[in-house]
Image (cartoon, rainbow, N blue to C red; front, side):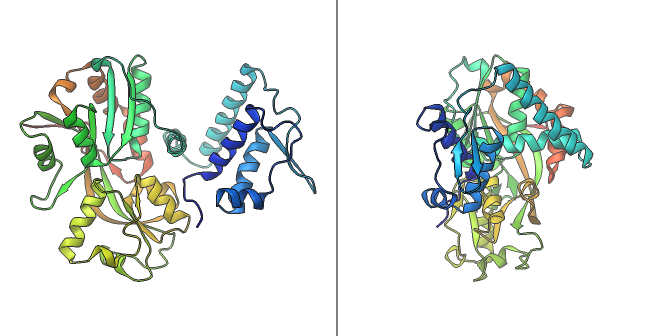
Length: 369
C-alpha cells in the first residue's frame, strides 16, 4: 500500500538534501532510479519525480539522458547567504505577481503561502513546548483549523518576545490540556446534542467551577469533501454507509468526530457499516489530501480544506469555533495581544480569503462560570 503522508515528495527531497550535506552523497554520485526509490519509499514514481525535480531546481542534482540522476558538481558549494536570500525573495515576488495576474487578491496569496507552510509543518517534528514566563507564553492545544497558522504567525510578529506552540489534539484533548494546566488556549467546536449548543456544556463538564472565556475565532461550514464533480453523488451522512463509498474519518476527541458520531446515533447508522470509519486523521488537511489522492472517496471536514485541495463540498452544518482561556490567562499581555490580532482587519481578510468562514463570531467574548 502506498504511503499517505502529506507532501511525501518534500520528505524524500529533504532526506537526500541531508545526505548531501552530511557528505554521504558526493558530487557525481548516482542516485537510485525513480523506480527503485519509489519502491524504497512505498510511493508512486511520480512522487519521486517531483522530489528529483525540486532538487534539480535547487541545483543539488542533475539528470542526464541515459546517465540517471547524479549529485551536481557544485552541490556542496552553497551560494553566499545574501545571494540565497535574494533568490528566495525573488521567488516569493514571482509567486505574488503570478497570483495577482491570475486575479487573486494579496490576502488570498498570503493565505495560500500560509497553507503551504502548514502542510510542511505537518511533516516536521513537533516543536518543543515553550518555556518562557507564563505571562509571555502561549501553548495552544485543541482542534485543527486552517486559520490558526495565520493567527499564530501574525501574533508572533506582534509579540516577538513571546513563545508559542501548537498541538492538534482534538477539541476534547484541548479542554483537558487546559484543565491540567498544560495549555493556555484550547481550540474547540464541540456540539452537544442534548442542548443543541456549542462548547459551553463541554467546558462546564471538563472544567467545573472554573471561570473560562470563550473567544470566538469564526463560524465555519462543516460538510462532506468529495472529488470534483461528486462522481458518487454523495449528499448526506446516510450516503457514507453505501458499500462503494470509502470514508476517511477524524480522530476520537475531535469536534468533527463528535458531531459525526452524534449524527450516526440519531440516524441509527452503525459505524461498522461505513467502509473506512476506523481510518482517522488528525487534521482537516490530512482528510482532504486522502480524498484528493484517491485513497478515499469522501471525508468530513471544513470547506476551507476542500477548497484548498480542489474538492467539491457538500455543506451539512455550521460550526462555532472558539478559543477557551481561563480567567487568569486572559489577564496576561500575550492573551490580550491574541484577542487584538484576532480582531484585526488583516486577520479578518485572511480568514475570508480561505473560504467557508463567516466573521459574526470572530472576536466575540462569552464567559462560562
